[in-house]
Image 1 (spheres, rainbow, N blue to C red):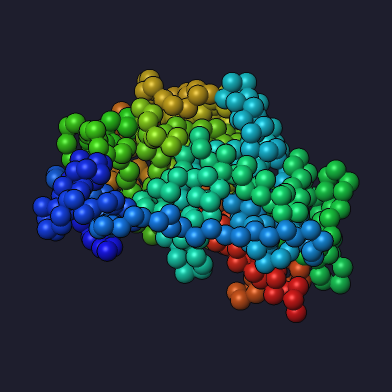
Image 2: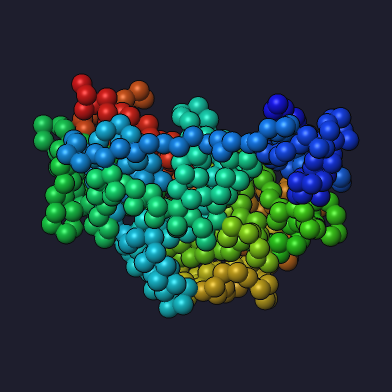
Length: 529
């Protein structure tokens, strides 16, 4: 017999199967001799009170042997000789689009401007050690996309557009831990995700698809208002309908589309800093106890949101037990992001702390930066130009290297320059800088007020032990590539399927994967008409 129970137990019980069996025996009246096995189906932490509980959904096998049915496996057939579809970009949107195309009987040709996920490591190391940014291989460009080496968090609130469970199951099929099917906030880890991505690529090739690295799309081939393929900087051309999954940092792609009459629209973004605390302090605050996480709890997470003068101020991409990393994708930029290894075991915890900006805000004087004038830009690209201008200003403040300007959190709210800075995980180094002075007032004023609200609601959070590191600008795409709501095809050009985060229709690994699958299905309908 198989029984399922919803349990609310202490962390030490949830962490040990024998103690869990004893709890089931005592609280549910089960005979311990009949419990052959237990399987946790869902797990979340309730840390709202001083006594912390783990919520579990548990399947109990009574006098039965569990079968290996953790998740369904997807069958990927050979697609040799099948109609081909061009997938531009090998991030989560592109990879899941390619795999879904194989399921549907189409041959994906994946074109990626960056290097494979292993070779990217050398270029990432050069950013930290030598302050050299390879504009084609960095934290944004390369196999796996921006998520491959910036955490691998798999939590999304987007449930309406597709099957998020399948995305997690496919990750498990290619080597991720099955714990991601259980946890409320699943996470693979930046140390383990590259192997999973390699396995996905190898499957695409084994089924008859192609993957071309270090091959940048330079133009779409458009004939009679229909996309027929792409041209690349290597001189190769690839023919077929195009799933465009280039990510939110492919600014050259946006400029080409805008110049060549492909319909875009401006959209809001969020801009701010990376805020880094000692992980031990965040554990103490979130778990309401001096010992912090103890032996049975993970590094603590947090989430903050406030409204300040009509705009949202919120935490973004929180990385418990993680690192702050240099995420520039071109020259004269300093951009920061966060990541966590699978064990979330570093001495620091960080998150983006950002302020919402809408396109209409760019007319305000408070958003202007020294020496920058956005009035001559195409209106749809003004938000992109603002991102670039702020990143360049940060590069200048850091001394024209990947050293990042930084300020203690409480000093920022008091508008004081920090005399010194705490030790940080950001390996290129920090320089004390008055962020309150040179960041646009629209951002700095709202961040300051947001921090003060968060400090009142979470005692100890607003502290000079925390460091603000500038700047966080790549929270989402600054434009949306307009597509039809139902067919996912571009509104005015047939054969073009804008996909994922770079197209403005997703926000993270899982939602980009969902959108990639939906785009593959839309291409299938298009080709089968």
